[in-house]
Every structure is written in C-alpha cells, then in structure tokens.
Image 1 (tube, rainbow, N blue to C red):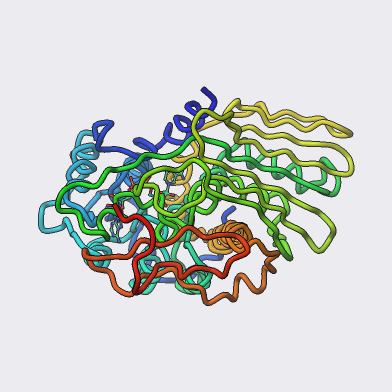
Image 2: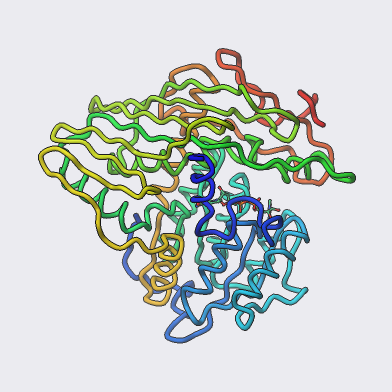
Length: 445
Ligand SMILES: NC(=O)c1ccc[n+]([C@@H]2O[C@H](COP(=O)([O-])OP(=O)(O)OC[C@H]3O[C@@H](n4cnc5c(N)ncnc54)[C@H](O)[C@@H]3O)[C@@H](O)[C@H]2O)c1
C-alpha cells in the first residue's frame, strides 16, 4: 500500500511516472548578464520550447512549461522512437493544442535528435535517460539555449564533471539552467530547510533519508528489437543508462542530505547493496537495495537507504538529528515537523512543485535573471554515484577520488544493434567494465 502510494505520488504531477503510453498515453541566482540567450525574449514574445525525451516526465514537464507562460509554444520534439513522440504529442495537443506547433518536419528521431531540436527552440527540456544528460546539456548550452534538465544529471563521474563545466558556461552566458530536483521547488521543503539552516535544531549530527519503494516497470523483448533498443526500452534497469536506482530515483532523498548539510559534501562513503529479487533480462544489471553511510569532516554521519522490492514496506522520509532538536519530513503525508528547543510545523501553501519549477524558470527567462541549479544538481548526483560506487566495490570510497574517477559508462558506439549485456557488480570483486565492449556477459534475453 505504502509502495503504491509512493509510486503514485511521484507520478502525481507528471503525466505518469513511467509509462505514459499505457496510461493514455536552490537555485543559484546570478546577476543579469546581457546575453542573446535571453535578451531576445521579452514582454509578450513567443518562447519556443523543445522537448527531448518524450516519455512520462518529459510530457509532464512540457505541459507545465505550457501552463507557465502564455507565450510558450512547443515547436520541436525529439526521441529515439516514433511511438513515444506520437503518444506525447497526442497528450500535449489535447492539453494546449493552440500552442503545440510540431509539424512532422520538426519531429526528430535518433541519437542526435537533440541537435535538430536545438535548432528550432529558445528553451529545451531534457528528459531522456540520465546517461544522455551531460552530452545533451553541453550541446544546449553551447547553442545558447535555456534548459530544464531532469534529475539525475549523469550516471558517472566524467558525466558529472561535464555537467559542472556546462553549468559554469551557462552562468557565463546568462542562460537559465534548472534541474528536476523538484523538492527544491516545494514551498514546504524550502521553509523547512531554511529553518534547519537558521539553526532550529542546532548543529546537524546525523541524518537518515529513505527511498523504500516497489520495482519499476519492465518491457518484455519484442520481435525486431536489437540489444540496444531492448536496453533503452528498459533503461531504468541498466546502470549505464540510469546510474542504478540510487542515482536515478533515490537521488531525490540523497539531495535532501546535500540540502540539509547546506552544500557540504561528505569526505567518504561506505555502502552495502545487492540484488536479491530482480528477475528476467529486462531487469538488467541494477541492484535492488542500497544502504550508504556518508561521513563528514565535521564528524556528522548521514545515512541513506533505498530499495525497489515488491511486497515490502515503503518509506520516503528524512529524519534529521541536531544538537538542539530533531526534524522529520515526509512530504507525502505531508508532515514537516521540528521538535526540541524550537518546535515548528509547516502549515503554509503546498502548490504543485512541478508547476512551480516551470513558473520560476519562465519568469526568470522573461526577467533576464537566470537561475542556475548547476552546483547542487551535480553534487547530489555525484553523492548518489559515490554511494553506488561504494556499494558495487565493497570499499570505502573517498569523495575526491570518486569525482576524479575515469570510469566511463558509455558504450563504444550509439547504434541500434548488438550490445553486450553488462554484468551485475559483485562487492569485493574488481569493478566490471561498465558496458562490456567485447564479450557478452549474462543473460541477454
Ligand atoms: N523529478 C521527478 O519526479 C521525476 C519523475 C519521473 C522521472 N524523472 C526523470 O525524468 C527522466 C525521464 O524519465 P521518464 O520516466 O520520463 O522515462 P521514459 O522512459 O518515460 O521517457 C524517456 C524517453 O526518452 C527517450 N530517449 C531515450 N534515449 C534518448 C535519446 N538519446 N535521445 C532522445 N530520446 C531518448 C525514450 O525513448 C523515452 O521516450 C529520467 O531522468 C528520470 O529520472 C523525474
């Protein structure tokens, strides 16, 4: 029940969490810098928006962009698969038909679809699997476009470093870069973390965040699907595409730790994890549970646990312990409560955070006051990758080493053809090649 509630909750403000087809289908303000990226969007001007990755979240995000500003027009879409564009376009046309202007010649397919979308827009929404985020974000910022990019930002350290470089470039160019770390746009979370930063519970000594939920959908292999297509259609289950569920899904709860610690990164992490209940080739090579200990230079220890298992209890909460009190936050109940010397409970408004993201993004673009989520979105992604690396390796992994790592999860080429199946990592064993380049490993189905 709890799991169902959790899954439904994550979808609540998207079109659906995962399967649109079946269902029907802290920001860093930077000063205004004169830049063609936004200076040409003023007053009531039309803002051309493009969508790359036309699945559940992308369709939801495009709807929210259309709601955010009457001048928004969806002008281009890109995906790997025509069926995803058709389903998404159908929904968006029903939602805001007069401002959906995507004729066939502006619907792009293929691994370079984002480049063609970029030629036709002022703002781009990036909602593909996270593997592709760093390269697509780089292309967007190089092209001088404003970006809404879903979380997480990358699946490996080279990807995180690329995202940091793109975020810095966006800042120099005066472009807005907003992330899909949506809790950063929730009024209740903002109020609660502001209280923590103001010392409501004193110094934070430890914290535990949870993301205990059920498994995500699987797509059985269809006739004619290549290995690459099969893995892409089941991308959440392949580490090279999703980063594993601690990075892909639970990064929200890891971000709460980053937020509570006010951007302080851990010095090292130790983690346990494994794969007990996943079955079938569709479930790729990801784990189904992780437990991470993050250690800080100031002596604080923060813990994160996540699992995707059926028939188990669910939880998605942050528990924060300080020298003057405690705080617990379950955004779904919803309850944001501080006890101790300075008791407090959030009782303010709770507008849809997914809509707030886009309202703030387009207001920033209009006002010429760019938002830039670059540092926290990269750091929360990297903290999740650090936890995964510690679990996969069985070792204690230093932040600096993990961030400098050369382990690159990219395949040798992007083609709809043969692609060996990656192995399941075994703690204490040498790290497997992220995506095998030669010999096939495991059951490819
Ligand atoms: N913030 C949130 O609450 C939230 C909720 C759900 C998903 N997400 C994130 O949004 C992203 C998308 O998730 P989703 O649930 O919509 O997945 P999805 O599978 O429904 O959609 C992804 C789409 O991207 C397409 N795609 C894959 N590779 C591509 C490429 N190289 N170029 C163009 N298109 C490509 C797929 O064909 C698919 O249509 C993920 O990063 C996920 O973590 C965030």
